[in-house]
Length: 101
Image (cartoon, rainbow, N blue to C red; front, side, top):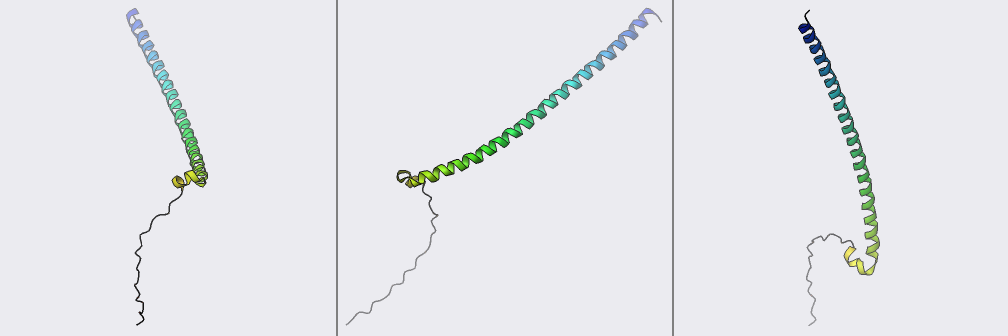
């Protein structure tokens, strides 16, 4: 083998090693990115569960406050529960009074 062929073989081997290392490094980086994304999604699930729990508690507290405020005379007209109005037709029968003659 001539020195030129030896140099070409060496450079080709070096190129394959460099490309292999770059592919391995990119694979590791992509793996780390996917791992981080999975952690972020899990933490978002925990946050959404916490928000759901807090909103239920808040709803109960608001209901309690409205019940207590409806007892006070000044706020009772604003917070009292109104019953739905049902439209009914009232039939009134007119009766004749017997007139005495």
